[in-house]
Amino acid sequence: MNLHHILHCGILAAFATAGYAQTGGWYTEGDFAPSTRVKITLVNTLNIARKDIPITIPASVIPVTNIADRYLTVVDPTLPGKPEPTKEELATASGYLERKETNGHFLEYQMDDIDKDGVWDEVFFMIDMKPREAKSIFLYIGKSERGLYPHKTHAG
Image 1 (cartoon, helix red, strand yellow):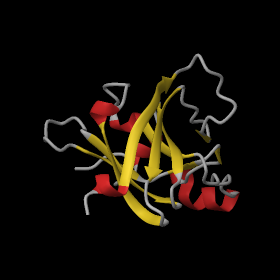
Image 2 (cartoon, rainbow, N blue to C red; image 1 turned 90 degrees about the vertical axis):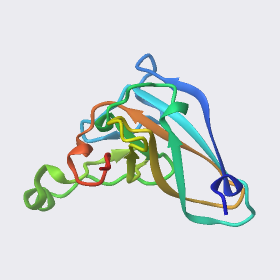
Image 3 (cartoon, rainbow, N blue to C red; image 1 turned 45 degrees about the vertical axis):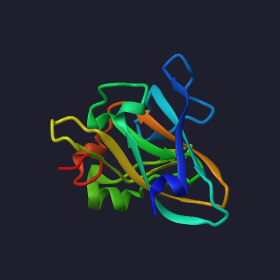
Image 4 (spheres, helix red, strand yellow; image 1 turned 60 degrees about the vertical axis):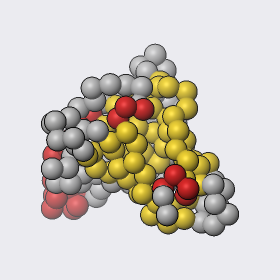
């Protein structure tokens, strides 16, 4: 079944920038506090709950251009954020742990370079949705250290 028969994906309200306060729902993780975000609204058009729906968003529909792969963070604001790691966890894993999140949870994703020109063409992630649910996802734009980890914000 074609993805377009399952789910409709669109951009709403272009993007918000640093002119907006970073309170009232903006995602943070540790000292990562981006100043720009794009709101994506996903709609499950079916009368059944869906688990692990593949979502692909072409770079061409994102109103912010030339986003480096380490400058994108995909967030579901309806999911609970991770708590701050314990001192023991930090001692074991050092800075590679996700830090305390506010206003949502980071979604694992990858950026694909379909035409192999060295610039990503789409961002891909998976999400769960309730029947007939409309859900907002945010693409936060700002330097993140998540790109240092294998298979997180880039793909070969």
